Image (cartoon, rainbow, N blue to C red; front, side, top):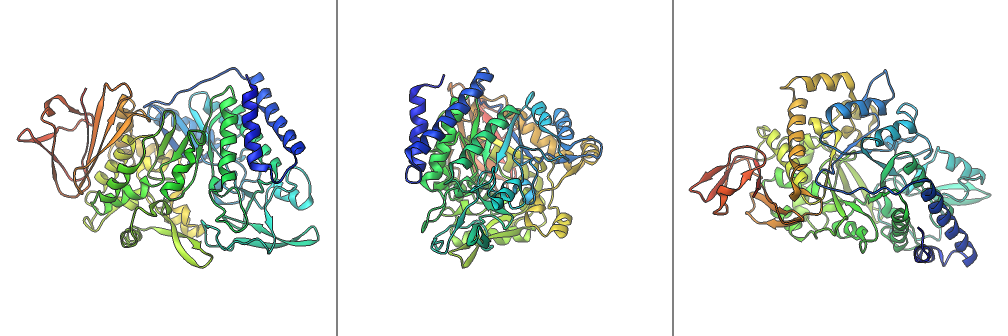
Length: 574
């Protein structure tokens, strides 16, 4: 039931966003349209509620991460998922499956269609019958070759006034950039010269959210996705949504208000949905997207991947330890989404304020030795800085200055995932990481796109055959990660909102304690970050604890736990 108070909240959000641009009459119109959208949806849909738990886990994939010539790719993936992954993951994050002109789906041409080679909406809905589905709302920009932009050039709907143009008076000197190409593109349109805004690429033109019709369009897209089985929305590149003259054009208050409005709307829908913000930014800025428990339901834990990988490569927990000690615990139902690998690479901006310049430079040099490419961003339109390291997690952790032959590559890899899986929040594993996939150098040679090293697609027959044989690299990595996920699912202390307490074991060991919400289980997670055995003092009642990971604990003099190189233990009190 939509109450008068609910309508006032929606109106308040619209006023904060649009009051200086629109008349009261215009805001009245858009308020009524939003209210009508909510009422129509709820009229057709009974109430559905879902809860997160220790069983909430995500696999991140493309619609064609597994492909075959015989069927549409989403159907192929679903069949593979049912056979190999459903016992370990309850949620599938399909990266953009819309028709797109570039960036592996992130230059959307039509938000209301599914790319034909992948399948159709009934395929997405069919997946949602047995798994939660997460999908991208590519909300900041749209394709230069899409329907909206073609209509924009003709002053036709939908698309009229949808794209952001500025004139020479717009001061961009403070704009924070995520890329190093030229931001503005001069065009002659409607008998005058203007500049198109292109945050991410010349093919991805930024949308104009000063036009409320654009916002309404994305609310309708969200409803359309829910009607087709999607219940988790990844707001791609959301931090860049609103632009103001003379500002950084990132994290502006109007952007936060738009997210809060979307949260208000989703909270009022009968079908429970989740909003997750994708903000590859320094820690403080990233955390701001929780708002006051009124903005994102989940945020990506962007600082975890670079700090975790750094700790293993340099056998030093100092930076990871300091960060996790200061990381705030989440409020109930708000969550960190934890990951090590994504379709892009290892974000470097989240290390700002956490790694000093000397440490960062050493980190980047080590990653480069391991095969990393680098994507850059411009600072103040002049200086270039590394934005992300484009490398698979397998290659990133394969060798270090302490282990130049890669003797412990498997132990490093599994323990890094063990930390991520046990950490406060919801674990998300990139599909290729399940099999220890290396850089796709062949694809990079063909496309020249740095990110393509981390976007390998598997032939169904190929990956299926490799998993049938016990000693293949893919089978070993798959079985070890599945074991970690399976154990996690049965521990109340690994509920996403279970308390996390940082533990200090010195620079060679990293550890934390998880306490179940009902206080009935404690799990202490300890990892040796070094290539040499390490000793740490444990509780005198160690006889009452067990290692959930199964390996026998090496206890010395009933006081000290001896950890093998890169060994992880999960010590439970029941």
